[in-house]
Length: 282
Image (cartoon, rainbow, N blue to C red):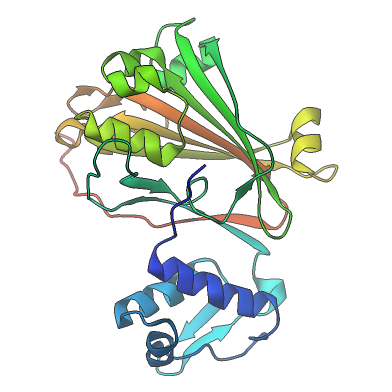
């Protein structure tokens, strides 16, 4: 399985996060200045600033105007932060030579596989049919992955790909079981402008989930869904979590869906949110 390096700002943030976790930067310690980070990591000032802002958004540091960024007390910050993002290099590589897109969970090196992926064919249940916008019993290609990080935390990942998506893209018909980044690259190369809708909810794990993910008794898990939709003229950008299948210009086609499960114990999800243009309700 190929892995894509995280963005530079995230690599800087990861290094600082490790210093915080190891006590090199204890609570109340002043973070290195942007100028120091530029020199240490050979990055731009904007990249250094983005790394500090990422740690701020995670609750690991607080920024005091004119004084710098300081490490927050352990009681004030979550132990685990999981980054949810999709990176896009904007570069289309020759077929089969690389992925234009990358998922910061599955395609980066934060998580490593515990075992080989399990791939199989299934059918859309009533609940999946609604989520994917396909008729019940539509054939699906499904890939299950179990991953772990350096701290031993576990994450289960499932990718649903309706056979209706593969019909339009011969490369997927030949090889439907791909990592998210490789799937998104194939979809973009097939002429689909992509947009994504994320849903997050907490629920109590089933016994199987609790055993697989090593979730302590009485602890909920975080269930996330990333739905990939066609984005014609911005329609998908106005889909909501109550009605993913429709945008302002009519039905929005769902192409695929990722689903992840992990323990919610002292954990949080971190997102980079891009503002959308305001539209009239008239």
